Length: 186
Image: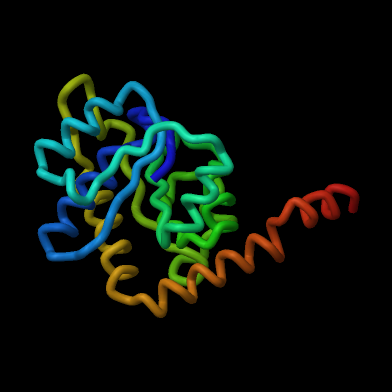
C-alpha cells in the first residue's frame, strides 16, 4: 500500500484486512508507504490490533525506491474512495509486476483491471467510512470484499502469478508511454 495517509485513501482498510487474514492463519507482510494526517491513527490501530509483526510503516521514499519495492511485492492494495481520479500508482504497480487489488471507485480501474485476469476489483468504500477524528467508521461490505479478494489471491499462487504477467503485458502493450505518444500523434 502506497499513498498519503488521508481519510479518502482509506489506510484503515488494509490494516483491518490484515487483522482478518492473520486471524485466519495466513502468513504475509503488509508494508505501508507514505505519510499524512491519518498516519498516527493507522499506527495506533496496528498497535490496538496487535499487528506489529505483520504491518510495517515504511515512511516516504523517492519514487525509484517505491518502484523497486513494488518489484519485491506481489500485491498492491489501492483502497481510495470516489475522491481518487485516475490514480497513476495503479499503472506503476501493474508495470512493476504487482497484482493490483483496487477499489471499483478509482478512475483508472475500469480501463486497467479485468477482474480475475489483470488484477482484482473489490467493492469500494463509502465516503462516510474511515478515520473520523480519532474514531473509526468501518465499511464492512468493502472490508469483506477486499479481504475475500486478497484471500483468494493468497490461496492461489499460480493464478496470482498469471494475473501479474497479464497486467504487466497489458501495461507494456496497451498503456505504455510509447503507445500513449503514438496514439496522441494518431
